Length: 569
Image (cartoon, rainbow, N blue to C red; front, side, top):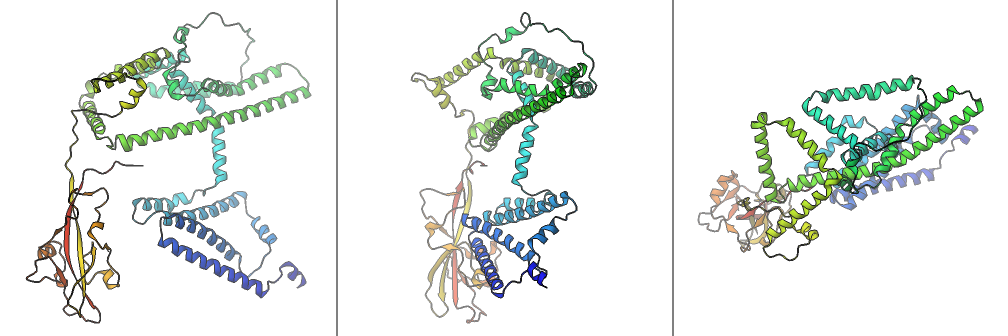
Protein backbone atom coordinates (compact mmCIF):
# COMPACT_ATOMS: atom_id res chain seq x y z
CA UNK A 1 0.00 0.00 0.00
CA UNK A 2 2.81 2.37 0.80
CA UNK A 3 4.42 1.63 -2.54
CA UNK A 4 1.16 2.28 -4.36
CA UNK A 5 0.72 5.55 -2.57
CA UNK A 6 4.25 6.57 -3.41
CA UNK A 7 3.72 5.45 -6.97
CA UNK A 8 0.44 7.32 -7.58
CA UNK A 9 -0.43 9.86 -4.91
CA UNK A 10 -4.15 10.50 -4.57
CA UNK A 11 -5.51 13.80 -5.65
CA UNK A 12 -7.20 15.90 -3.01
CA UNK A 13 -10.86 16.88 -3.42
CA UNK A 14 -9.90 20.52 -3.73
CA UNK A 15 -7.53 19.88 -6.65
CA UNK A 16 -10.12 17.79 -8.54
CA UNK A 17 -12.74 20.47 -7.89
CA UNK A 18 -10.46 23.13 -9.30
CA UNK A 19 -9.78 20.99 -12.38
CA UNK A 20 -13.49 20.41 -13.00
CA UNK A 21 -14.17 24.10 -12.51
CA UNK A 22 -11.45 25.03 -15.01
CA UNK A 23 -12.77 22.49 -17.53
CA UNK A 24 -16.28 23.90 -17.20
CA UNK A 25 -14.99 27.41 -17.80
CA UNK A 26 -13.12 26.24 -20.92
CA UNK A 27 -16.23 24.44 -22.21
CA UNK A 28 -18.35 27.54 -21.71
CA UNK A 29 -15.73 29.64 -23.49
CA UNK A 30 -15.69 27.22 -26.43
CA UNK A 31 -19.50 27.21 -26.68
CA UNK A 32 -19.70 30.99 -26.48
CA UNK A 33 -16.95 31.38 -29.07
CA UNK A 34 -18.71 28.99 -31.45
CA UNK A 35 -21.94 30.95 -31.08
CA UNK A 36 -20.18 34.21 -31.87
CA UNK A 37 -18.48 32.64 -34.90
CA UNK A 38 -21.82 31.29 -36.17
CA UNK A 39 -23.39 34.73 -35.92
CA UNK A 40 -20.57 36.44 -37.84
CA UNK A 41 -19.33 33.94 -40.45
CA UNK A 42 -16.60 34.77 -42.97
CA UNK A 43 -15.01 37.36 -40.66
CA UNK A 44 -11.53 37.61 -39.20
CA UNK A 45 -12.93 37.34 -35.69
CA UNK A 46 -14.74 34.11 -36.59
CA UNK A 47 -11.56 32.59 -38.03
CA UNK A 48 -9.57 33.49 -34.91
CA UNK A 49 -12.30 32.16 -32.59
CA UNK A 50 -12.60 28.88 -34.48
CA UNK A 51 -8.84 28.38 -34.42
CA UNK A 52 -8.70 28.95 -30.65
CA UNK A 53 -11.76 26.72 -30.11
CA UNK A 54 -10.16 23.90 -32.07
CA UNK A 55 -6.99 24.09 -29.99
CA UNK A 56 -9.00 24.09 -26.75
CA UNK A 57 -11.15 21.17 -27.90
CA UNK A 58 -8.07 19.16 -28.84
CA UNK A 59 -6.65 19.81 -25.37
CA UNK A 60 -9.89 18.76 -23.72
CA UNK A 61 -10.04 15.60 -25.82
CA UNK A 62 -6.49 14.74 -24.84
CA UNK A 63 -7.24 15.37 -21.18
CA UNK A 64 -10.45 13.35 -21.24
CA UNK A 65 -8.61 10.53 -23.04
CA UNK A 66 -6.09 10.29 -20.22
CA UNK A 67 -8.83 10.44 -17.58
CA UNK A 68 -9.92 6.88 -16.70
CA UNK A 69 -10.34 4.31 -14.00
CA UNK A 70 -6.62 3.49 -13.84
CA UNK A 71 -4.17 6.24 -12.86
CA UNK A 72 -0.80 5.88 -14.53
CA UNK A 73 2.30 7.95 -14.17
CA UNK A 74 4.02 9.66 -17.07
CA UNK A 75 6.79 7.06 -17.03
CA UNK A 76 4.30 4.20 -17.37
CA UNK A 77 2.48 5.97 -20.18
CA UNK A 78 5.76 6.57 -22.01
CA UNK A 79 6.73 2.93 -21.51
CA UNK A 80 3.41 1.71 -22.95
CA UNK A 81 3.68 4.01 -25.93
CA UNK A 82 7.20 2.74 -26.62
CA UNK A 83 5.92 -0.83 -26.92
CA UNK A 84 4.80 -0.36 -30.52
CA UNK A 85 5.38 -3.27 -32.82
CA UNK A 86 7.53 -1.26 -35.20
CA UNK A 87 8.65 2.26 -35.86
CA UNK A 88 6.44 2.39 -38.94
CA UNK A 89 3.32 1.82 -36.86
CA UNK A 90 4.33 4.57 -34.48
CA UNK A 91 4.94 6.95 -37.38
CA UNK A 92 1.57 6.00 -38.87
CA UNK A 93 -0.16 6.77 -35.55
CA UNK A 94 1.55 10.15 -35.39
CA UNK A 95 0.51 10.93 -38.94
CA UNK A 96 -3.09 10.01 -38.15
CA UNK A 97 -3.07 12.32 -35.14
CA UNK A 98 -1.62 15.15 -37.17
CA UNK A 99 -4.11 14.48 -39.94
CA UNK A 100 -6.95 14.46 -37.42
CA UNK A 101 -5.87 17.80 -35.97
CA UNK A 102 -5.30 19.31 -39.41
CA UNK A 103 -8.65 18.12 -40.71
CA UNK A 104 -10.43 19.58 -37.71
CA UNK A 105 -8.67 22.89 -38.21
CA UNK A 106 -9.60 22.93 -41.89
CA UNK A 107 -13.22 22.07 -41.09
CA UNK A 108 -13.44 24.96 -38.66
CA UNK A 109 -11.82 27.36 -41.11
CA UNK A 110 -14.14 26.10 -43.84
CA UNK A 111 -17.19 26.85 -41.72
CA UNK A 112 -15.99 30.28 -40.61
CA UNK A 113 -14.25 31.59 -43.73
CA UNK A 114 -16.58 30.48 -46.54
CA UNK A 115 -20.29 31.36 -46.66
CA UNK A 116 -22.89 28.66 -47.17
CA UNK A 117 -24.12 29.79 -50.59
CA UNK A 118 -20.91 29.72 -52.65
CA UNK A 119 -20.20 26.71 -54.90
CA UNK A 120 -16.53 26.48 -53.88
CA UNK A 121 -17.61 25.37 -50.40
CA UNK A 122 -18.93 22.05 -51.74
CA UNK A 123 -15.67 21.50 -53.63
CA UNK A 124 -13.57 22.03 -50.49
CA UNK A 125 -15.85 19.76 -48.45
CA UNK A 126 -15.58 17.04 -51.10
CA UNK A 127 -11.79 17.25 -51.10
CA UNK A 128 -11.66 17.29 -47.30
CA UNK A 129 -13.87 14.19 -46.97
CA UNK A 130 -12.24 12.26 -49.81
CA UNK A 131 -11.41 8.75 -48.45
CA UNK A 132 -8.37 8.42 -50.71
CA UNK A 133 -7.00 11.69 -49.36
CA UNK A 134 -7.54 10.64 -45.76
CA UNK A 135 -5.31 7.60 -46.34
CA UNK A 136 -2.35 9.87 -47.04
CA UNK A 137 -0.23 11.48 -44.28
CA UNK A 138 -1.36 14.74 -42.78
CA UNK A 139 0.22 18.15 -43.16
CA UNK A 140 3.73 18.23 -41.69
CA UNK A 141 6.08 21.19 -42.01
CA UNK A 142 9.06 18.95 -41.21
CA UNK A 143 8.15 16.45 -43.91
CA UNK A 144 7.47 19.25 -46.39
CA UNK A 145 10.87 20.86 -45.76
CA UNK A 146 12.58 17.47 -45.99
CA UNK A 147 10.90 16.71 -49.30
CA UNK A 148 11.91 20.10 -50.72
CA UNK A 149 15.52 19.49 -49.67
CA UNK A 150 15.57 16.00 -51.19
CA UNK A 151 13.91 17.23 -54.37
CA UNK A 152 16.42 20.05 -54.75
CA UNK A 153 19.34 17.67 -54.26
CA UNK A 154 18.03 15.32 -56.96
CA UNK A 155 17.30 17.96 -59.60
CA UNK A 156 20.87 18.39 -60.80
CA UNK A 157 20.19 16.53 -64.03
CA UNK A 158 16.99 18.47 -64.61
CA UNK A 159 18.72 21.85 -64.29
CA UNK A 160 21.61 20.62 -66.45
CA UNK A 161 19.12 19.73 -69.19
CA UNK A 162 17.39 23.08 -68.74
CA UNK A 163 20.59 25.09 -69.19
CA UNK A 164 21.70 22.82 -72.02
CA UNK A 165 18.49 23.59 -73.92
CA UNK A 166 18.96 27.31 -73.32
CA UNK A 167 22.55 27.15 -74.54
CA UNK A 168 21.44 25.24 -77.66
CA UNK A 169 18.70 27.73 -78.49
CA UNK A 170 20.99 30.71 -77.85
CA UNK A 171 23.74 29.24 -80.10
CA UNK A 172 26.33 29.02 -77.33
CA UNK A 173 27.46 25.72 -78.88
CA UNK A 174 26.81 25.92 -82.64
CA UNK A 175 27.65 22.27 -83.26
CA UNK A 176 24.99 21.09 -80.82
CA UNK A 177 22.47 23.55 -82.24
CA UNK A 178 23.07 22.29 -85.78
CA UNK A 179 22.83 18.67 -84.60
CA UNK A 180 19.50 19.42 -82.94
CA UNK A 181 18.24 21.05 -86.14
CA UNK A 182 19.28 18.00 -88.15
CA UNK A 183 17.50 15.68 -85.70
CA UNK A 184 14.42 17.91 -85.82
CA UNK A 185 14.44 17.76 -89.61
CA UNK A 186 14.78 13.98 -89.53
CA UNK A 187 11.85 13.67 -87.10
CA UNK A 188 9.70 15.85 -89.36
CA UNK A 189 10.56 13.69 -92.38
CA UNK A 190 10.28 10.33 -90.59
CA UNK A 191 7.84 10.62 -87.64
CA UNK A 192 8.62 7.10 -86.39
CA UNK A 193 11.88 8.53 -85.02
CA UNK A 194 9.82 10.00 -82.18
CA UNK A 195 9.77 6.47 -80.74
CA UNK A 196 13.19 5.38 -82.01
CA UNK A 197 15.24 8.27 -80.57
CA UNK A 198 14.18 7.74 -76.92
CA UNK A 199 14.92 4.03 -77.30
CA UNK A 200 18.36 4.84 -78.69
CA UNK A 201 18.97 7.15 -75.74
CA UNK A 202 18.00 4.40 -73.28
CA UNK A 203 20.29 1.96 -75.09
CA UNK A 204 23.39 4.11 -75.66
CA UNK A 205 22.91 6.73 -72.96
CA UNK A 206 21.85 4.60 -69.97
CA UNK A 207 22.32 0.85 -70.44
CA UNK A 208 25.71 0.74 -72.19
CA UNK A 209 27.32 3.40 -69.93
CA UNK A 210 25.99 1.48 -66.92
CA UNK A 211 27.62 -1.72 -68.14
CA UNK A 212 30.88 0.08 -68.95
CA UNK A 213 30.90 1.58 -65.46
CA UNK A 214 30.36 -1.85 -63.91
CA UNK A 215 32.97 -3.54 -66.15
CA UNK A 216 35.45 -0.83 -67.16
CA UNK A 217 37.59 -1.74 -70.18
CA UNK A 218 41.33 -1.33 -70.20
CA UNK A 219 42.21 1.90 -71.91
CA UNK A 220 45.74 2.65 -73.12
CA UNK A 221 47.24 5.85 -71.82
CA UNK A 222 46.96 8.54 -74.49
CA UNK A 223 49.23 11.53 -74.74
CA UNK A 224 47.20 14.72 -74.50
CA UNK A 225 47.81 17.27 -77.22
CA UNK A 226 46.93 20.92 -77.32
CA UNK A 227 44.01 22.17 -79.31
CA UNK A 228 45.09 23.49 -82.69
CA UNK A 229 43.33 25.84 -85.03
CA UNK A 230 39.71 26.75 -84.46
CA UNK A 231 36.35 25.14 -84.83
CA UNK A 232 34.74 24.97 -88.24
CA UNK A 233 31.64 26.71 -86.88
CA UNK A 234 33.45 29.37 -84.85
CA UNK A 235 32.35 32.07 -87.30
CA UNK A 236 28.79 31.59 -86.08
CA UNK A 237 29.72 33.08 -82.71
CA UNK A 238 32.04 35.80 -84.01
CA UNK A 239 29.92 38.61 -82.52
CA UNK A 240 29.89 40.52 -79.21
CA UNK A 241 26.07 40.43 -79.13
CA UNK A 242 24.07 38.00 -77.03
CA UNK A 243 21.06 36.04 -78.14
CA UNK A 244 17.58 37.43 -77.61
CA UNK A 245 16.84 34.24 -75.66
CA UNK A 246 19.44 35.17 -73.04
CA UNK A 247 17.80 38.59 -72.68
CA UNK A 248 14.46 36.89 -72.09
CA UNK A 249 15.93 34.48 -69.54
CA UNK A 250 17.99 37.28 -67.95
CA UNK A 251 20.40 35.07 -66.02
CA UNK A 252 24.04 36.02 -65.80
CA UNK A 253 25.06 32.77 -64.17
CA UNK A 254 23.90 30.65 -67.10
CA UNK A 255 27.33 29.50 -68.24
CA UNK A 256 28.65 28.89 -64.72
CA UNK A 257 25.66 26.73 -63.80
CA UNK A 258 26.04 24.71 -66.98
CA UNK A 259 29.66 24.00 -66.12
CA UNK A 260 28.88 23.11 -62.50
CA UNK A 261 25.91 20.94 -63.44
CA UNK A 262 27.83 19.13 -66.14
CA UNK A 263 30.79 18.63 -63.83
CA UNK A 264 28.63 16.64 -61.42
CA UNK A 265 28.03 14.11 -64.18
CA UNK A 266 31.68 13.18 -64.32
CA UNK A 267 32.18 12.62 -60.59
CA UNK A 268 31.53 8.91 -60.76
CA UNK A 269 33.59 8.56 -63.92
CA UNK A 270 36.54 10.34 -62.33
CA UNK A 271 36.33 8.07 -59.33
CA UNK A 272 36.15 4.95 -61.48
CA UNK A 273 39.17 6.01 -63.51
CA UNK A 274 41.11 6.93 -60.41
CA UNK A 275 40.23 3.59 -58.84
CA UNK A 276 41.48 1.68 -61.88
CA UNK A 277 44.71 3.67 -61.92
CA UNK A 278 45.35 3.18 -58.24
CA UNK A 279 44.67 -0.53 -58.54
CA UNK A 280 47.30 -0.85 -61.21
CA UNK A 281 49.99 0.87 -59.10
CA UNK A 282 51.01 -0.89 -55.87
CA UNK A 283 50.66 1.37 -52.81
CA UNK A 284 50.58 0.91 -49.07
CA UNK A 285 47.40 0.44 -47.03
CA UNK A 286 47.64 3.73 -45.15
CA UNK A 287 48.02 5.76 -48.32
CA UNK A 288 45.00 3.99 -49.84
CA UNK A 289 42.86 4.77 -46.81
CA UNK A 290 43.92 8.41 -46.82
CA UNK A 291 43.15 8.72 -50.53
CA UNK A 292 39.70 7.16 -49.98
CA UNK A 293 38.96 9.58 -47.15
CA UNK A 294 40.01 12.51 -49.32
CA UNK A 295 37.77 11.28 -52.11
CA UNK A 296 34.84 10.92 -49.73
CA UNK A 297 35.44 14.42 -48.40
CA UNK A 298 35.64 15.85 -51.91
CA UNK A 299 32.49 14.01 -52.92
CA UNK A 300 30.63 15.29 -49.86
CA UNK A 301 31.72 18.88 -50.54
CA UNK A 302 30.66 18.61 -54.16
CA UNK A 303 27.25 17.27 -53.15
CA UNK A 304 26.78 20.15 -50.69
CA UNK A 305 27.83 22.67 -53.33
CA UNK A 306 25.47 21.09 -55.86
CA UNK A 307 22.65 21.26 -53.26
CA UNK A 308 23.18 24.99 -52.72
CA UNK A 309 23.25 25.66 -56.45
CA UNK A 310 20.17 23.50 -56.97
CA UNK A 311 18.31 25.37 -54.22
CA UNK A 312 18.99 28.65 -55.97
CA UNK A 313 17.96 27.18 -59.32
CA UNK A 314 14.87 25.67 -57.69
CA UNK A 315 13.96 29.09 -56.32
CA UNK A 316 14.39 30.69 -59.74
CA UNK A 317 12.46 27.84 -61.35
CA UNK A 318 9.49 28.39 -59.03
CA UNK A 319 9.67 32.11 -59.83
CA UNK A 320 9.54 31.34 -63.56
CA UNK A 321 6.68 28.90 -63.01
CA UNK A 322 4.73 31.55 -61.09
CA UNK A 323 5.38 34.08 -63.85
CA UNK A 324 4.16 31.57 -66.42
CA UNK A 325 1.04 30.90 -64.37
CA UNK A 326 0.44 34.66 -64.09
CA UNK A 327 0.72 35.03 -67.87
CA UNK A 328 -1.63 32.09 -68.35
CA UNK A 329 -4.16 33.59 -65.94
CA UNK A 330 -3.86 36.95 -67.67
CA UNK A 331 -4.63 35.34 -71.02
CA UNK A 332 -7.49 33.26 -69.61
CA UNK A 333 -9.16 35.97 -67.54
CA UNK A 334 -8.37 39.07 -69.62
CA UNK A 335 -7.38 38.35 -73.22
CA UNK A 336 -9.66 35.34 -73.67
CA UNK A 337 -12.12 36.66 -71.08
CA UNK A 338 -13.17 39.60 -73.30
CA UNK A 339 -11.79 42.34 -71.08
CA UNK A 340 -10.82 44.10 -74.32
CA UNK A 341 -13.75 42.96 -76.43
CA UNK A 342 -12.24 44.07 -79.74
CA UNK A 343 -9.03 42.13 -79.18
CA UNK A 344 -10.86 39.04 -77.91
CA UNK A 345 -13.28 39.18 -80.84
CA UNK A 346 -10.38 39.41 -83.29
CA UNK A 347 -8.68 36.41 -81.64
CA UNK A 348 -11.95 34.47 -81.73
CA UNK A 349 -12.42 34.99 -85.47
CA UNK A 350 -8.77 34.21 -86.14
CA UNK A 351 -8.87 30.94 -84.18
CA UNK A 352 -12.19 30.05 -85.82
CA UNK A 353 -10.81 30.55 -89.34
CA UNK A 354 -7.61 28.61 -88.57
CA UNK A 355 -9.60 25.76 -87.01
CA UNK A 356 -11.93 25.34 -89.97
CA UNK A 357 -9.06 25.74 -92.42
CA UNK A 358 -7.10 23.01 -90.63
CA UNK A 359 -10.08 20.66 -90.49
CA UNK A 360 -11.20 20.99 -94.10
CA UNK A 361 -7.95 21.79 -95.95
CA UNK A 362 -5.39 20.14 -93.65
CA UNK A 363 -4.92 17.14 -95.90
CA UNK A 364 -3.83 19.40 -98.77
CA UNK A 365 -1.27 21.40 -96.75
CA UNK A 366 2.42 20.31 -96.91
CA UNK A 367 2.95 20.06 -93.17
CA UNK A 368 6.47 18.62 -93.23
CA UNK A 369 8.10 21.52 -95.12
CA UNK A 370 6.15 23.97 -92.97
CA UNK A 371 7.38 22.46 -89.70
CA UNK A 372 10.96 22.13 -90.98
CA UNK A 373 11.10 25.73 -92.17
CA UNK A 374 9.46 26.99 -88.99
CA UNK A 375 12.01 25.22 -86.78
CA UNK A 376 15.00 26.44 -88.77
CA UNK A 377 13.71 30.01 -89.02
CA UNK A 378 12.90 30.09 -85.30
CA UNK A 379 16.38 29.00 -84.24
CA UNK A 380 18.06 31.25 -86.79
CA UNK A 381 16.16 34.23 -85.36
CA UNK A 382 17.53 33.28 -81.92
CA UNK A 383 21.10 33.73 -83.19
CA UNK A 384 22.96 36.68 -81.61
CA UNK A 385 23.60 38.27 -85.02
CA UNK A 386 19.85 38.51 -85.67
CA UNK A 387 19.17 40.41 -82.46
CA UNK A 388 19.87 43.89 -83.80
CA UNK A 389 17.67 43.33 -86.85
CA UNK A 390 14.77 42.19 -84.68
CA UNK A 391 15.12 45.21 -82.39
CA UNK A 392 15.25 47.61 -85.37
CA UNK A 393 12.17 46.01 -86.90
CA UNK A 394 10.25 46.25 -83.62
CA UNK A 395 11.12 49.91 -83.11
CA UNK A 396 10.25 50.87 -86.68
CA UNK A 397 6.92 49.01 -86.51
CA UNK A 398 5.91 50.76 -83.28
CA UNK A 399 7.01 54.14 -84.59
CA UNK A 400 5.03 53.67 -87.82
CA UNK A 401 1.95 52.65 -85.85
CA UNK A 402 2.25 55.78 -83.73
CA UNK A 403 2.69 57.97 -86.80
CA UNK A 404 -0.37 56.50 -88.49
CA UNK A 405 -2.43 57.04 -85.37
CA UNK A 406 -1.58 60.76 -85.07
CA UNK A 407 -1.34 62.87 -88.28
CA UNK A 408 0.86 65.59 -86.79
CA UNK A 409 2.80 63.96 -84.00
CA UNK A 410 5.49 65.52 -81.84
CA UNK A 411 9.00 64.06 -81.97
CA UNK A 412 8.61 60.34 -81.54
CA UNK A 413 10.33 58.71 -78.59
CA UNK A 414 10.52 54.96 -78.88
CA UNK A 415 10.18 54.36 -75.12
CA UNK A 416 6.92 56.36 -75.07
CA UNK A 417 5.71 54.54 -78.15
CA UNK A 418 6.04 51.24 -76.33
CA UNK A 419 3.59 52.48 -73.69
CA UNK A 420 1.12 54.18 -76.01
CA UNK A 421 0.65 51.49 -78.65
CA UNK A 422 -1.04 48.99 -76.38
CA UNK A 423 -4.75 49.35 -77.09
CA UNK A 424 -5.96 47.04 -79.82
CA UNK A 425 -8.24 48.91 -82.20
CA UNK A 426 -9.73 47.81 -85.49
CA UNK A 427 -12.41 49.74 -87.33
CA UNK A 428 -13.83 46.61 -88.94
CA UNK A 429 -14.72 45.08 -85.55
CA UNK A 430 -17.81 46.68 -84.03
CA UNK A 431 -18.86 45.64 -80.56
CA UNK A 432 -22.41 46.96 -80.08
CA UNK A 433 -24.48 44.43 -78.18
CA UNK A 434 -27.97 45.36 -77.09
CA UNK A 435 -28.37 45.44 -73.31
CA UNK A 436 -30.10 42.68 -71.44
CA UNK A 437 -33.33 43.83 -69.79
CA UNK A 438 -34.98 42.40 -66.71
CA UNK A 439 -37.65 43.51 -64.25
CA UNK A 440 -37.06 44.23 -60.58
CA UNK A 441 -40.15 44.02 -58.38
CA UNK A 442 -40.91 44.87 -54.77
CA UNK A 443 -44.06 44.86 -52.68
CA UNK A 444 -45.23 47.82 -50.69
CA UNK A 445 -46.66 46.44 -47.44
CA UNK A 446 -49.14 48.30 -45.26
CA UNK A 447 -50.50 47.19 -41.91
CA UNK A 448 -53.49 47.94 -39.71
CA UNK A 449 -54.99 46.51 -36.60
CA UNK A 450 -58.19 44.53 -36.97
CA UNK A 451 -59.74 46.94 -34.48
CA UNK A 452 -58.91 50.03 -36.56
CA UNK A 453 -59.62 51.19 -40.08
CA UNK A 454 -56.52 53.27 -40.86
CA UNK A 455 -53.65 51.73 -42.84
CA UNK A 456 -50.03 52.65 -42.10
CA UNK A 457 -46.84 52.00 -44.06
CA UNK A 458 -44.93 48.89 -42.99
CA UNK A 459 -42.00 48.42 -45.41
CA UNK A 460 -40.90 47.53 -48.96
CA UNK A 461 -40.14 43.84 -49.25
CA UNK A 462 -39.32 41.22 -51.88
CA UNK A 463 -41.89 38.80 -50.44
CA UNK A 464 -45.66 39.07 -50.67
CA UNK A 465 -45.94 38.30 -46.93
CA UNK A 466 -49.17 36.33 -46.93
CA UNK A 467 -50.71 34.49 -43.98
CA UNK A 468 -48.70 31.32 -44.68
CA UNK A 469 -45.36 33.12 -44.77
CA UNK A 470 -42.85 31.56 -42.35
CA UNK A 471 -41.53 34.91 -41.15
CA UNK A 472 -45.06 36.12 -40.47
CA UNK A 473 -46.03 32.96 -38.61
CA UNK A 474 -42.93 33.23 -36.42
CA UNK A 475 -43.59 36.90 -35.68
CA UNK A 476 -40.60 38.22 -37.65
CA UNK A 477 -40.54 41.14 -40.02
CA UNK A 478 -39.99 40.39 -43.71
CA UNK A 479 -36.69 41.35 -45.32
CA UNK A 480 -36.89 44.79 -46.87
CA UNK A 481 -36.24 48.53 -46.63
CA UNK A 482 -38.18 51.58 -45.54
CA UNK A 483 -37.68 53.66 -48.71
CA UNK A 484 -37.66 52.95 -52.44
CA UNK A 485 -34.35 54.73 -52.94
CA UNK A 486 -32.68 51.95 -50.95
CA UNK A 487 -33.87 49.27 -53.37
CA UNK A 488 -30.87 48.33 -55.51
CA UNK A 489 -30.67 46.26 -58.69
CA UNK A 490 -28.91 42.87 -58.66
CA UNK A 491 -25.15 42.69 -58.95
CA UNK A 492 -23.79 43.83 -62.34
CA UNK A 493 -27.16 45.38 -63.19
CA UNK A 494 -28.13 49.06 -63.33
CA UNK A 495 -31.31 51.08 -63.34
CA UNK A 496 -31.89 53.43 -66.26
CA UNK A 497 -30.24 56.80 -65.70
CA UNK A 498 -32.35 59.94 -65.36
CA UNK A 499 -35.36 58.06 -63.99
CA UNK A 500 -34.92 58.23 -60.24
CA UNK A 501 -37.47 56.11 -58.37
CA UNK A 502 -39.40 55.56 -61.59
CA UNK A 503 -41.41 52.66 -60.24
CA UNK A 504 -44.56 51.46 -61.98
CA UNK A 505 -47.64 50.30 -60.10
CA UNK A 506 -49.19 47.01 -61.13
CA UNK A 507 -52.88 47.93 -61.47
CA UNK A 508 -53.98 44.42 -62.45
CA UNK A 509 -53.62 42.38 -59.25
CA UNK A 510 -56.01 39.64 -60.42
CA UNK A 511 -53.88 38.97 -63.49
CA UNK A 512 -50.74 38.96 -61.33
CA UNK A 513 -52.18 36.35 -58.92
CA UNK A 514 -53.25 34.17 -61.83
CA UNK A 515 -49.89 34.37 -63.63
CA UNK A 516 -47.91 33.58 -60.47
CA UNK A 517 -50.26 30.69 -59.56
CA UNK A 518 -50.76 32.09 -56.07
CA UNK A 519 -53.40 30.71 -53.74
CA UNK A 520 -56.37 32.99 -54.35
CA UNK A 521 -58.02 31.87 -51.09
CA UNK A 522 -55.43 33.84 -49.15
CA UNK A 523 -56.21 37.18 -50.80
CA UNK A 524 -59.13 39.49 -51.50
CA UNK A 525 -59.24 42.13 -54.23
CA UNK A 526 -61.96 44.72 -53.88
CA UNK A 527 -64.19 45.48 -56.84
CA UNK A 528 -63.53 49.22 -56.89
CA UNK A 529 -59.78 48.80 -56.31
CA UNK A 530 -57.80 51.11 -58.62
CA UNK A 531 -54.49 51.29 -56.71
CA UNK A 532 -53.50 47.62 -57.08
CA UNK A 533 -53.92 46.65 -53.41
CA UNK A 534 -54.17 42.97 -52.50
CA UNK A 535 -55.74 42.38 -49.07
CA UNK A 536 -55.50 39.46 -46.67
CA UNK A 537 -58.51 37.17 -46.61
CA UNK A 538 -59.61 37.45 -42.98
CA UNK A 539 -62.50 35.02 -43.23
CA UNK A 540 -62.45 32.10 -40.81
CA UNK A 541 -59.58 33.72 -38.90
CA UNK A 542 -59.64 33.71 -35.13
CA UNK A 543 -58.82 37.18 -33.87
CA UNK A 544 -56.73 35.79 -31.06
CA UNK A 545 -54.36 34.25 -33.63
CA UNK A 546 -53.93 37.20 -35.99
CA UNK A 547 -54.47 40.71 -34.70
CA UNK A 548 -52.97 42.58 -37.67
CA UNK A 549 -54.04 42.70 -41.28
CA UNK A 550 -51.77 43.41 -44.23
CA UNK A 551 -52.27 44.64 -47.72
CA UNK A 552 -49.70 44.89 -50.47
CA UNK A 553 -49.25 46.09 -54.00
CA UNK A 554 -46.62 45.34 -56.60
CA UNK A 555 -44.14 47.90 -57.93
CA UNK A 556 -41.68 47.14 -60.69
CA UNK A 557 -39.13 48.79 -62.95
CA UNK A 558 -36.63 47.71 -65.58
CA UNK A 559 -32.92 47.26 -65.06
CA UNK A 560 -30.22 46.83 -67.68
CA UNK A 561 -26.97 44.98 -68.05
CA UNK A 562 -24.59 45.73 -70.92
CA UNK A 563 -22.21 42.95 -69.97
CA UNK A 564 -20.80 41.49 -66.82
CA UNK A 565 -17.24 42.32 -65.81
CA UNK A 566 -14.64 39.91 -67.11
CA UNK A 567 -13.74 36.83 -65.14
CA UNK A 568 -11.28 37.34 -62.32
CA UNK A 569 -9.03 34.80 -60.60
